[in-house]
Length: 459
Image (tube, rainbow, N blue to C red; front, top):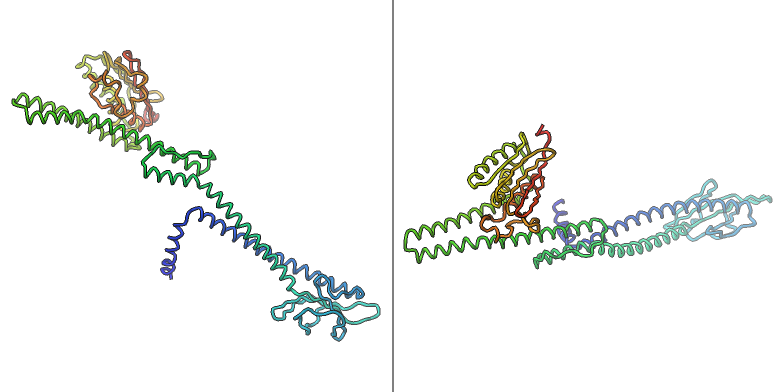
């Protein structure tokens, strides 16, 4: 039985899934309204039927008793009640019985009695005639229940007609409201389809009423998502363009040297020089690829495994390394590092980030570099140099991948790809920190990194 029902239900379910959402919502709440109106109509009809029946019983008893007490005011029909005067022997003296009322119905002095004759139903009541002349007999009042049934049917018809009219108006109005309410959803769907066909991420959902409801939040979220995707796409396009530009030179050099070696080299010295050029360019390409792989791994990170880092020890080790490098390059290098600084984070990433900033300082400084690591409310890592500096208009862009400040002016010193500061910024953000730079060209440039600390690790 279960499998039979499942086979029957599956095509119905598939059909329902293809019905548009607006029709589903309109149908469901229309059915709900019909059920509610049906239940309300049933309650009203039942309540009204019982109330009217009680009223008819009361009216029947009052009219019969009044007619029995005052025979002179007798009427054969009084407000839907048939009145008959019977003799003591049960002979009808005045009045007429309604159709189908049984002639042999027994006397009912004590209570109102209901009697059925086929499909017809009647209420009747008998009362003895009170007369000073001593007249004997009784008056019988009869009420056909068909009157009450007709009243009930009329009410039922009115309720059904009104209910159907109400549900129809509500369904049409609801359909219109739902259509307008779901318009942003259709706009999102159409826009997503257009973007899928055209690949144009600059499209946006326009004219969104600032209602603050779920539909508005959906449209706003979709617009923000498109902005983020467009920015990411543009960044990737620029990145691919810059990488192509960077790779073009070493590849061209390698091809030229290989072609020259193949056709024109005639001595061992020329071959060594050609191989040296090829080796230099291939090493540059290898370094570039390694940096790109490391950045790709860093870009995919949303969080890092945090472990206590002895930051003072890491900084001291870096300071010793760059102190030796400064002697080789004839640069003045000083450092100020607080003791016992412990930070939660990734030691390798932080060490490489500090090294990247120090490398930049050593590349572009004139005479001195200062390295400082202190701890108060936050950890502050400062690298200062007196080099060529960064123009103010370039500072917002130095965190972008492959961005280099005035490459013509710095080509002699800058052998990098413009990936170092982008790497540093990502590492700092993964540690919930901030980084900013202040620079006066040819005077001083200061990079400041601030990282939050856990006070329990530095007590």
